[in-house]
Image (cartoon, rainbow, N blue to C red; front, side):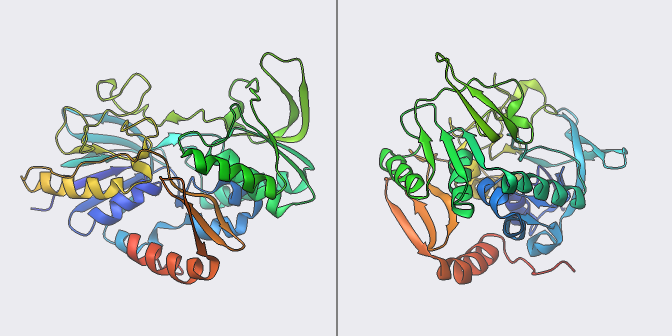
Length: 372
C-alpha cells in the first residue's frame, strides 16, 4: 500500500525532503511561492539579481526527483493532529483537506523582505527582486545593520559590485558572525575591509518596529546610549528578527518561541510519523538542521517508521556554524570550516563541477536546464 507524505514548506529544506522521499512514497508538497525561491545569498540577490535568479529561483518542474510528487501552491491553514490532516487554501481561495500517513514540517521562518510566505505569481517575484536591486543601484550611501550572515554577505557583495558607493556595516558586538569560530570571524573582518566596507563595531542601532520586513529606504540611524546619528540613502536591516512560520500549527507541538519541538531524530515530540526540519525545528540555538543534511535524517527515520521499523539516525548539531559566507567570488568559493579554517574552491571547479555535478546531480538528483 502506497503511503502518503505531506511536505509542508517548499524552501531549500522542503525541496530536499520532497526530492528524497518522492522516489518511494506518494508525496504532496505544499509551498507558498510559485517556484523554489531560496532565502540564501541575499547579497547576490541585491547586487546581481539576474545571476541570483538563475541559481536561486528555480521552477519546481526542473527538478527531476520531483516529477512524481504533487506540487501545490497554497497557504497552510491548520494541522489537525487527531484526524491527521492538513487544511490548505489555494491561490484561487478554494480550501482542501489533505489526509496523510506522515507529515514533514519544513515551513522555515520569515526574516526581512526576502523571506516571506507570500502567494505571489512568478512574474511578481521577478518584479520584486528587480525593484529591490534597483534601489541599491541608485543609492550612494548604504547602511547595513546587522553582523550576521545576511548583513555580512550583503555588505561584501554590494561593495564588490559597486566600489564607487559607500557601504557601511553596523555590528552590535566586537566582531560579526556570532556562532562561527573566532578565527572565522577575524577572517571575515579582514575580507570585508579588503573589499572597502566601512565597519562600525559595538554599534547598537535603535530598531524601529517592523523595519526589518519593509523594503529598504533612506533614513537616519540612531544608536542606543548615544546621541550620534548616521544618515544613509538606503538602510538595509539584517537584524535577525526571524519569526517561525508556525501560525498554522497547534500550540501543543511548539516551544515558547513558536518553533517546533523535536527529539534527536527530528521527530516531533509526542507524535508518530510527524517530523520537523530546517529553521522551523527547535534542534539547537542556530536551528542548524537547515544546513547540515537534516533532510537525510528525516528521509532515513521517516522511511523506517513507515515500514514499522525503529528509527536510528540522530541529528547532531555542529559545535560551530560553517559553510560559505561571501558566496561565489571572482576567484572562487570560500568555505569556512567548523575548526576556523577556510577552503578555497576555484571558480572554474565550482562552476563546472560543484554546481552541475555535486549539487545539481548529487544533492538534487538532476536539474533540467529548462522546464518541460
